[in-house]
Length: 233
Image (cartoon, rainbow, N blue to C red; front, side, top):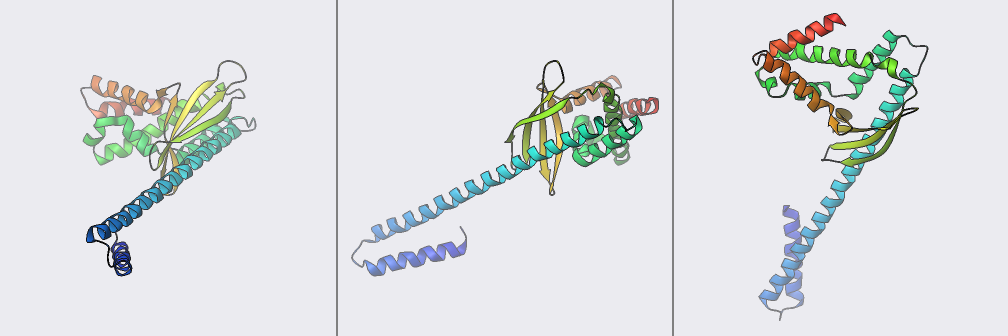
């Protein structure tokens, strides 16, 4: 407890003693204990309100962030005047602005991250981004007026939230998509996307682990695989 609070409580106890000289020391102590307990309860309530207020801010911010991603993405996907190269450029910028690629890439590499050299990490993260851009750029032609509806968001920590949404095609079933958002250094970033309850980060991690294990546990095998994909795109 901060020192000034103890001082104020001591002054309160002294006032009680002076005003009621015939009350027992035990009763005085009871009064002091009640005052301390009340102060503690008030502090806990204030902390609870503060934490929930922070949670609300993160949740609301995360929800708006995902809505902005959707607006921005649909904007360049539906723009018929853009070439495939221009759409790819817009997607790369969206990826760099809105996704924590280092966190996602590090998670995808799993336990092998610790055994890689700095130069390998640098090359891996570059190749990882190129792979993501290449894979999703090839899917741009599949876009036919899909919409994204955000239907909820919950806090999962002091700086994390999950935003729930639905991809609504012009025809066919809706697709459930959850966005794991992290607020760090004053910015919101996507750290995972969960499609129909399947984590994209976990899926990628499993795929990379299989490649590395087939190559005798060497990260260089994965790097060679990613280099080959990058050269062949």
